[in-house]
Image 1 (cartoon, helix red, strand yellow):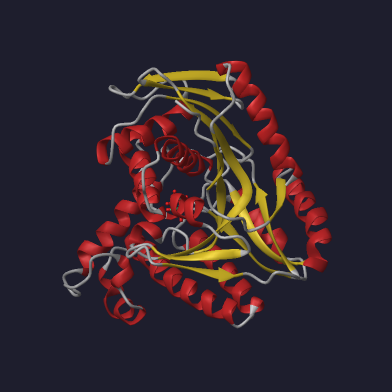
Image 2 (cartoon, rainbow, N blue to C red):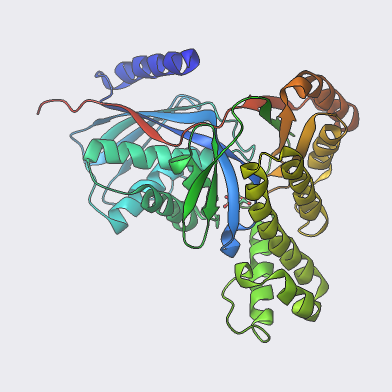
Length: 396
Ligand code: GLA
């Protein structure tokens, strides 16, 4: 908290230095880790992420110009765009997220007024902790605070996802933007990615920690195999439709349907579909396990999820396996798995309090011995989703 206050203070200072006035509004939007339900969102399936205590802060004030000026504290760069002709900035990649959000807001909802923004974040970049989704959501919240329009949380999440799909050009699902906007403190969020129905599921307040370990292997979603996996899932659906005409997505294929018809699929496509179908089942079981306080079962489901992502979906890598395996060897670790899109990024582990110290000593040491790099490790708290921290419109 003291840290957040300090960041707000520094951001305000920077704002005054650049624009000569203090910000009118200040918002924050968090990054996320997904506890279970990986590569299910774009199959209309289930996910169970938490928002984390790492976030993007944006300070904003109206400007008289019909344009938006962005300053990034992290990159120490300015990027500016006119509201009547929003294009991608090929140099300042980071600015394409707020640009995309402004573009989508104007396309779908309303004409925006000009604004001056300062952006600062403490979510590690390209680590699979959804700094991009957080930047989109924080941008949308800032435009909303300054322009004062109504928009529900799910609608804002969808708008930010559309900005990423259509403007930035990354074909992501809905999970990251949804949890960044709608996460709840001390809870995981169970999301049905078809209906967008969601339910906050409490995590035990005492006795466990969520630990995120970063391989430090950078992974760009755009260049990765993400789109190939999506296409394979679509192929599975179109082939299975011959036998199951009512299905729209892998979400609609039951385990028993799959036992009957799965063998009709080519081997690679079959493995991809098997992951998605079993993973959806694991999410539903996990929620029951959490409701019953059965952390041992929850942890086993996390481990199975990792194995399925490694062997069936084939999106893990040496580094992620090394981190998960090191965690599995520690008594008191309920479960550990890769989280996010894969091919690098982070693992998430559910760890009993009394095992945290051993985890923090042994996992980085074993990873260093195998991979030659010291991973970053964060003990995370499930935080609330995006919020307006301050909004004080000035008299005209
Ligand atoms: C990325 C995407 C999400 C989701 C995950 C995999 O984080 O942005 O929409 O598909 O990968 O579960």
